[in-house]
Structure formats: C-alpha cells, structure tokens
Length: 277
Image 1 (tube, helix red, strand yellow):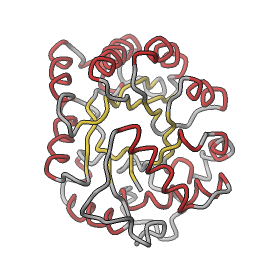
Image 2: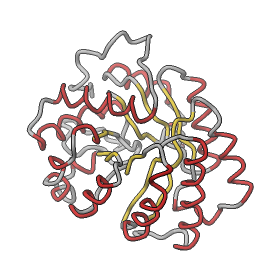
Image 3: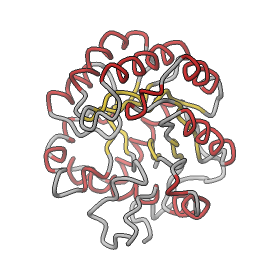
Image 4: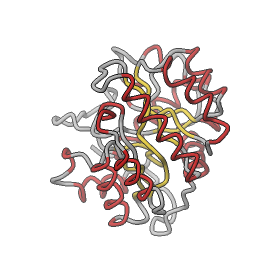
C-alpha cells in the first residue's frame, strides 16, 4: 500500500519517527508521502525523504490555515523545493472555510500561486477542501488544463462536490474519516461512486485515527501503520476485496506521483491488511 498523505514532519512524531516507520513497513506500507503544510514543514518533509529514500517522498506547499504568511520569498523558496526529485507534488494547498484561520483572500492568493507553480513544474497538486468547494472548484476548473493532475485529499464533501472533482479528472483521497460512525456515514454512502482508477488512500497521520480499530492506541495518534484499516473499511463500503483495493490504490499513486517500487521490500507484507497493534 501507499499512504498518500501523512504529516510525519509534525512534532507528534519527533520522538519516535524511526519506530513509526518500522511499524509502517511491517504493516505493508511501501511508500509514504510526507505532507508539506508550510515552508518550514516542506523543508522538513524533503529532509525526511532524503534520509529515508525508498520509503518517504515529500510534497511542498502552504496550507490554507497559514496562507496569510504567503509572500514572494515563500514563492521563490517553494519553487526551489519543487525542483528536487524527492518532492513529488505541490501542496497542501486549497481552501479551509470551516475554520478560516487565514482570510479568504489570502487563501485565494496562496492557492492560485501554487496552482501556477504546479503548472510550471509539471507536478500534481495535493488539495485541501474543507467547506471550501465554492472557492476551490472554479479556480481548479480554470487551471486544470495546465495541470498534470491532482488529488482532493481527505475528501469529506457531498455527492455533487465529488462528481464535480471527478469531472475535472482529479483523484480522491480517502482517510479514517470514513471509519468514524459519528460523521463518516455520508461519505460511506458515496465511496462506491468513485471510479477505481481515481481512488487513493491515506492516513493524514497524526490525525483521523480510525475509530473502527479493534485495539485503538491510548494516545489517539494516528500512524501510517493503520492505513490497512482505512483500506479494509473502504473495501467493505465498495463491496470489493481489500487486497485488490490495496493494489489498485497503490498503482494509482504510482501513476499520479511518478513513484517506483521499493527494491528493498520485494513485495508487500502478507499481513498488510491486518496491521499490528
């Protein structure tokens, strides 16, 4: 499996990242995209990808929460990061109007600049949308002909929003939100409508620990090792084999982000869909 979104540069992993990565490999995780959410975090993501070549790759971008910090120096620094081969996508960028920690106009400015960067460097976009569809979709529609592709990460929207993104030929990322009986039921009813070649899975660690885990960790910190739980729940919702879904989403990630197989693994772990506690 490939985890297309984990915030491993977050302070939550500062004390035991090596152990987290060992557990991920034992659970059958072949690749992890380390999400860049600010200039500092993007630099850290690149550093981790270089340190753990063969397992980690990085994205580089500025999250809508911190879009107020966007300026010309940020643009130049991200452009330099995106020249690095370990950086495989632009973002996390988009709109968050649920919290609106940065003003809407700042989010628009930062997002459009990052879409322009994606068009310039030919790398896909890693998109954030939390109650931001009305702002993000028209912007994407305008830029999509110049973009290589992208994923709406941690999708939690409506049926109409899903199909609007699919009409733009974007991928859809599914997280442990699906495993939450309190707020994931609407998403569970929609996931069978996502074409198999547009589906990706992710943990968004350290967030969104799957509530369906039999033995949930006491810390409530999510880790890439739990990606198999997201895959298994998604497969049940779609009426598919979890093993086949793992293979398909892995292939989709390889194609979208230009990833190769990890020669050190020699194939997925046979217990990939039943990760250890």
